[in-house]
Length: 59
Image (cartoon, rainbow, N blue to C red; front, side, top):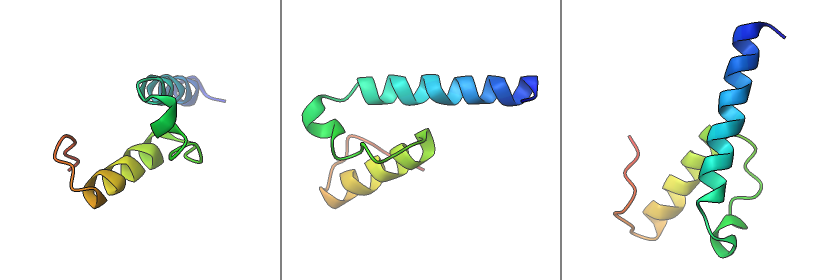
């Protein structure tokens, strides 16, 4: 793995860990199938939009 790829991978894992740790377990189970940060954030946005939530703006 190239050094830039390794850095990107490490940053992805850190971002994913921070986002998932911020959720309580009752909410996290809805997103446990997400394997990367982009999928996680996109799914979070879709669910927030369905629920009519205004606390999270994605765009």
